[in-house]
Amino acid sequence: MKTLVKPYALAAIVLLGLFFGLGGYAGQAADDGPQTTDSDVTAMLRRFLASSEADVRISALQWIARDPRTQDDSLIPAIFDTLKDSNGAVRNKALANMGWIFERRSGKQDGAAALAAIQNALKQTSDRPARLVVLDLLRGSAERGEYDEHRIARSEGMLTSDPTIQRLVASLLSDPRSSMRPEVLGVVKASRVLQAIPSVVDGVAAALHDDSLTVRSDAVDLLLAIEKRGELKQREQVRPMLLAALQENDPNVQLRISRALSLPIPPRKPVPPALSLSGEKVSTENVPFDFNYFTAFVQPLFVKKYGGAACVQCHVPGANTSGAFRILAPQPDGRYTLDQSRTNFVSVLAAIDRENPGKSKLLLKPLDPRASEGTIRGMIHDGGVFWNTQYDPDFETVQNWLKGAKIETAPDKQLDYAYFVQRVEPIFSTPGPDGFACINCHSTHAILHLESPETRDGKFSVEQLENNYQSAHRVVDEMAPSNSFIVRKPTSLREGEPGGLSHAGGIRWPDKKDSWQYKTLITWMGMKNLAGQ
Image (cartoon, rainbow, N blue to C red; front, side, top):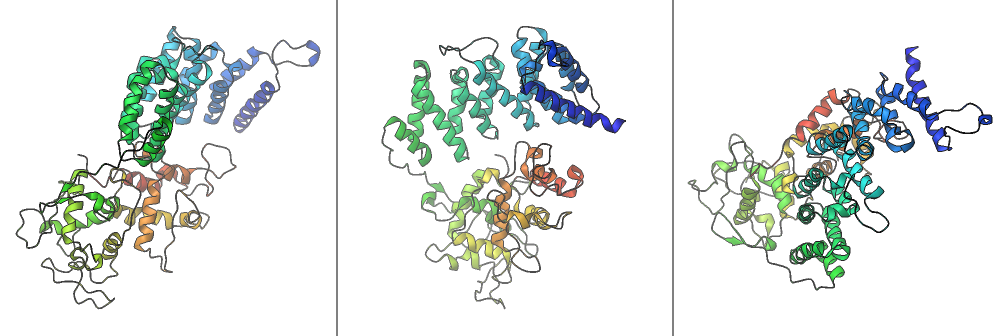
């Protein structure tokens, strides 16, 4: 009998949905047949909330959250109980009910408890899904009734009017490490109450410097909307922000502001020169090599040991070594900071022939002068031979950089490349239970675009590894690794099967979070390439 409980309960919820969808209510004519009264529905939902089956509790909570006709005050204690459920999905569905509880019971104890639950979910950083639920509540609160027909903002009973929530929204927008900016900007866009809070508007302006083009675009569009239709005080705050952004070297932002305000785009500002370790002032605008590629793939080679020797053992300032090539040593943990990386980027130019990059000392000094393979020979190097032939992957990496190779992942977002090659790439190329590997399907995907090895023995080229490394970053949530698509998708059911996030390839790791693949990826997402400042 126990196995029948869950199907029966889920079927009852579906029937309940159909009933309400067809307009069924208590009080219909007696000759219409057997009736389901509101009290019957409430009693049924109360039983479902107390079910031992998580899916039943989830379904009941989801139905209550979306249908006001089921939102009976007598269910509130049971809903609060599910906030402490051991199942995260149940807790999040319970959280989705805090909005109507707060708005209906504002000023009462349970209304205050609902508000506290919403605030706490927004404050924490480890549970991104819970934060997304709250942001949906805030957006819905604004869209449902923040204004009356005369467009006058309500000041009571609205989530967006709570000072603590306003401070948290401003904080999420202002934090450059926040991955929640796209969703938070959507909330502010829907809320004129939030648009009237100076600290929130400051946060929107801070988002103009986000690494994401989409975030910057959304932020400038929101500021322009406030400048156009806001109150005088709001326009006075926003106008200087827009004029300042117009002076920055972001073509996307400048173009939007220029068109909206009918102002010319000013001449591009020169980037201040950086001082290399040889004392040369270098304008990075005139450097044809990609900084992102340098920090991800080239700079780590300076600390890599080849036969017991590494570049940083001889080429650091103060070392008794001939030549102008100098680089900084990394932090004690072996990683560089962003500022150190910028210095090394301009300093390494001393070992590059800009007229003929292929003849650069940076490329040829570590290469064996007596290489037996290939057409390229190295130079005599006091540090010895690091690369035996031109086909060494590290030689190819530096060569590709000098030829103009680029990546989109910014330095502060980059994860450890060596660990990726050794431990993460095999996850993509190892067949799953169905005999297929990730690379078999993702070769045609736009976001997680994975390239297959070019040889029959499964060896990847440097370019393929770099492509897969960059693609993997697109499905990583650095603020909440366990919420990243790179681990959620392979543990999700196939598309068309009921139950949360779907994945065309279905479940790739039967052990899910206990699998070596899941644990490896979670570890990698905690391995920043650069050290903190």
